[in-house]
Image (cartoon, rainbow, N blue to C red; front, side, top):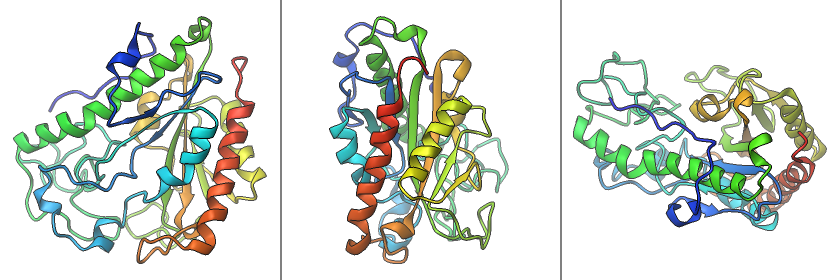
Amino acid sequence: MSSTVKPSLKAKKNSANILRPDFVQSLGDGSRPLIVTVPHSGENLPPEATWLQGLDERLLMYDVDRYVDDLYSTSLSGNGIAWVKTQWHRYACDLNRLETDVDQASVVGASEPVGRHPRGLHWSKTTMGDVLMLKPISIETHRAIVQRCFRPFHEAVAEVAEAVRSKDERSAAHPLFHLDLHSMPSLGTSEHRDPGELRADLVISNQDGKSSSSEFFELVCQAGRAQGFKVRENWPYKGGRITETYGRPRDGWQTVQIELNRKLYMDEVSKHKVDSLYSATQIRVGEMLTDIHRRISVTN
């Protein structure tokens, strides 16, 4: 299998000329060294993902971070924050994984045994245990999806980071702050680390302190609590491959993952918005993001 895309902190000249418009939502205004990624809100199936075509919407949407991009978009735009998202469905290509996170149930010829990556780069099973793949896909299909979906997203993240930092000549000496935004079911299933547990409103994680400074992590947690959210730290989520790969505080890149409880804005069975909840939650997460953006400075 091919190697994963590595993030870069080295600024490029004229990086805006090579940014990928299908992924980059905004370069931001450069007022703060902050970027945001939304890797799981996409609902489109790439043409190669034939095994997912025709599935019932409730099954297809079960693990998608539906509406997360919309919930934060107004605040992202209003604060001039650079952000990247994808149109592609996570069951076909999970961008919070590595290219090599495949097993023999998902890709023909994979080195890892069946069961090692049931929710890897290509999901073969949902978090409810529903089977998504009746047989593994070919290595050619895997490579085509990587080329269409995986690499462009991660290249876009690196390029946006470079563009944000290049707006300030002092940026190389200061951290880049990165929020990775997700949603989660309100109750852990048998496929989760916390089966049967009711979850907090927000789970905020940084790989148990590895992907960000304690100061930035606490800033994010405080911003959530200030909006009345119940916050749990690093459980049951500690951060995925994005926090693991990008979060390198010693190298000047700090990443924190935020999981938002779906019960706050949607019907978890139908996967549709609950209008009486949605607007209020959108305002609260927007205020949280605004607070984080305001409190970040180059002195962090």
